[in-house]
Image 1 (cartoon, rainbow, N blue to C red):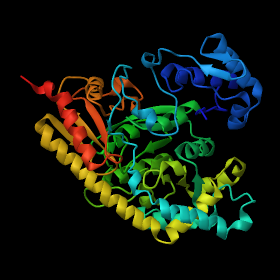
Image 2: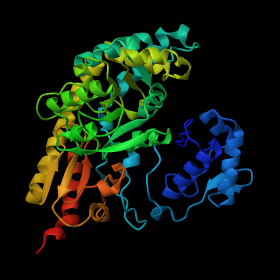
Image 3: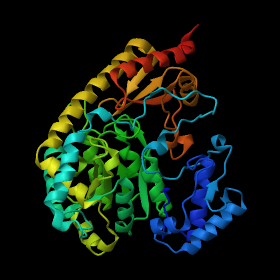
Image 4: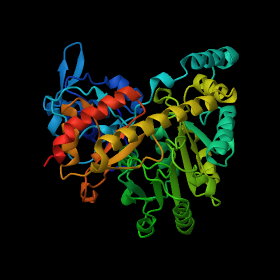
Length: 477
């Protein structure tokens, strides 16, 4: 399914929202040339709207030449020039890839053999045999419940297990009643847009996570970019804004990798208390920290119910599961109970399986294995970069997570660095779409981003040598 976000707070009718989003995705190449479009019926089921606005949107797209009909086959997207039309903000997508498309994608460039994608995980670490057993056992042990709907908030016993886990791992203090099991960050933010009905103005990290930002924007919230500095989100700027809520990634900011220190966390919490505002804490890869002692979650420091905590299984387990969790302050729990009909938790079978996976100790063993392997890859990548590029680069944002930020000491733009790397078969990223306003990008050395989760150490070494070959002429006299 295509990612379409229709807002009931928008002044535009549904057909116009649908038409504009599909047109934008075709022009940007998100929907590629020749892609078969969803049928009216399938979009109707996906969006839970009548077929009239869908048919109207398709007619408009067809009349303008963005789609064409093939007899007895359906509608197909048309954009033979999809690489050169990107401008302005991009629509939200189901994963971090919305931020990861390189700035320059000429069709003549060779396909990258070494992809330092920040979202990729090590497939060899996935406990396939054990997970298959958990799924089998879940169906065997709950056969009488297979034909019944579950709790839309998530299975209660599973929520109790998660509450115990995040208390131990991240210091999050909550009851099962405060937890909402979801199908990913988009789902959780969608719930929040309904719960925060009295909030009109939200502050966002600049640069920050495009998908979340676009979700809020499409739902009609006023957005204010707050700069990210060496110590994460600039609280001083936030204090001077009119924001009533703020979205932050404090344990490993995306994309810069900065971490908000304890003193600034207290200041951020004080802002929320003073303004009667909410902090949306996205702890998307809080399990992976390599330097220094683990910093507790913001929620663990909150004594006044101002922090909304969001965690996920995507980074530490697999994004294919599409399962996350959100911890609401008690006042919002009461509000959520009045809109329980809007909740839709993931597969009961997968919830039962994950519950058993954690209860039987497999999760903790899996996390230890992941941490050890990713720490080795993290250290090796930094070693390779330091060895081959020496003083020509500066590495930052490397205390946690699965990617690092590299400042390259050259006057060549980041987009050109990405293109030069691609010419040698290496994919790196400049994440330029993480900026709400391109004018806010600081003047200085260009920054690129390298992920290490999905590469073996051997491939990592090959990739760095190719990168050295691609960039070596930058520093020749």
